[in-house]
Length: 319
Image (cartoon, rainbow, N blue to C red; front, side, top):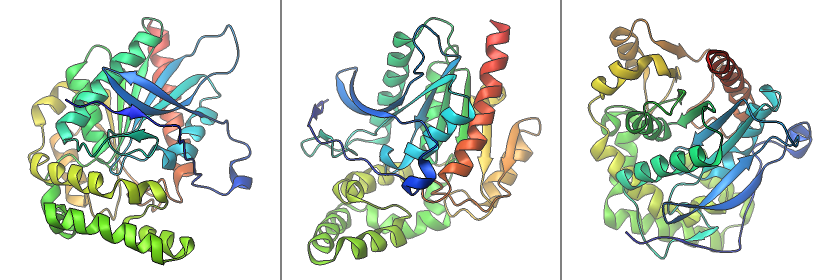
């Protein structure tokens, strides 16, 4: 499988205004080599020298997998955890302007293999027994649960936010996006995004992109074909709920659903509660949208930070 090569460009964005993020810790962008893949990685590390961390959080983004949108969310997790955990996030293969992918497109299975390899790299970098929590968003929840399936003894907990775990093609958003995942329309969409950027003022372009996708910025334009290509695999692969895996590991998963989510509607939440009555399954009461990283990153970061602190404290007590 072709590998990616790093470039020198590291774009950054914030999902909140600067004055709203002044109290938050700052992260850094790095290129990690993960099983031969150069991986654009956002990291928030404990700053105090000589002190170990109480846990590591791996954030697995949705699609598009643009980690810049998760800066505020990750920083809030660190702040809520009193700086006692490290938080890292890998960009999906082919979804970064910081890494040249030479036109290579990656399937959902490729992305899952990459996340398993990234998990292994985190295990290698931290002391044995360090609690590791996977936080997946949207299709990132599906990937995170596949990592749990592959590494059941190593994963402490999975937190699945607005998880797309079943019937993606027949959800309201799946029906809307489905046509765009066809090869010719993927190319047309990418060309249209490039054309719009050249003829529209930056503010107008960003508004149009945000209105259509819930995201903003240049990275989305660059990766639109890869985003739609991955979406095509999601539609084809994420159909039946993997009940066998969930039954085996439901005690290691926190599920968090939205009340008005076009990717995982209420029926998915109700189905999960019916199948797993003793599971830790929540329904959002804060009107947070599926694409929470735009406008609600602080709300979700605080919520997830509390869960992470609880999980890591329990695990460290057991150790």
